[in-house]
Image (tube, rainbow, N blue to C red; front, side, top):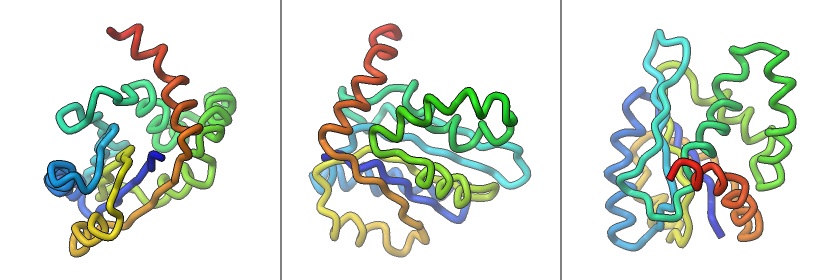
Length: 167
């Protein structure tokens, strides 16, 4: 079972610093990183900068289309207005099918704001106690959604077509 986890940091560079921890945990086989992305939002900027991480993820990565859709719903739809927001309704419904619902999107939107950063990770096989212990002291706030194996398969299927076109 995969878990989509969002670690929110109180500084614009906190998520970048947390990458070292995540990489170390993966090398110790305390977690498997299926895919990951970082959001940095410096103070005074209108919108955040997003980046998919390729260096620490395996071949099963979800791809940019997943992160683009998720970040679009979380951070950019509020800026685009109701007309575009209404058009995103069907896409939001498809994410709900895989365990990413409106409350998750709203929660992340409300907490990741200017001056903060976030590490988004799709992980599996985590030794939860050890992972949480490593993130203590980083002033990170954890927001997560558990995905069943079936939901993860649907998610991969939904975005696999996009990956094939990029190859």
